[in-house]
Image (cartoon, rainbow, N blue to C red; front, side, top):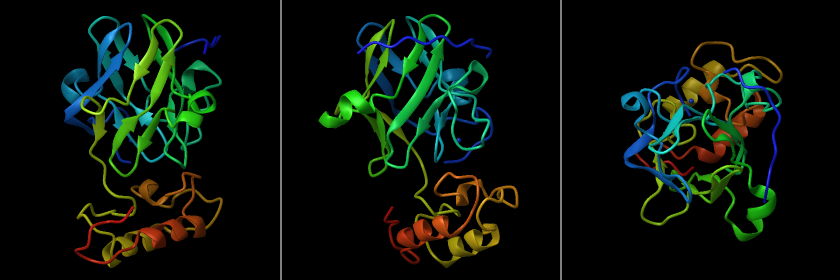
Length: 229
């Protein structure tokens, strides 16, 4: 599989631009067959490390042999996913199945493509964020570095992320979370109406409407019960 990209380069579930990494520091590594270990957590002491949001990634990876790899600046132009059509709006996205797609950028090795769905999905090896375990799986590809292995059973990248719909981060999805969702509900094709409501946009379409409510309902499990999604 080979790719060519000709874009000029100028160049969180929760965080501001390059907020602190939510990679679990006990599981920060992926392996590049030609470049060695890629550390997803430690850039700038974790302040600029990788961060997973509901629909995209942000932050930097660090590799001893090639330097930094930029996953995206955390501010996709449409508020939901990077377009990857020009350099100022590039990064790695997460689709509704958890599959990754889009481009990361390294000053030293160029583009790294996280969209391996067409070639590797038949083998369940596409790059993806496993929502059940909170870890990355599959493989990404760089024209100049070859395969990046996200799938090792012992050494892998894991994220510490709250369950979907658990807005108060207390480990369950209950009426307290419904109160937060209700305060953010604003109907279709209308931007989230207050600061902090981005997390209630569960389907990543830049509004908080009945689509999001359906997803919230499927996650609702009551107080003091483990979140089910």
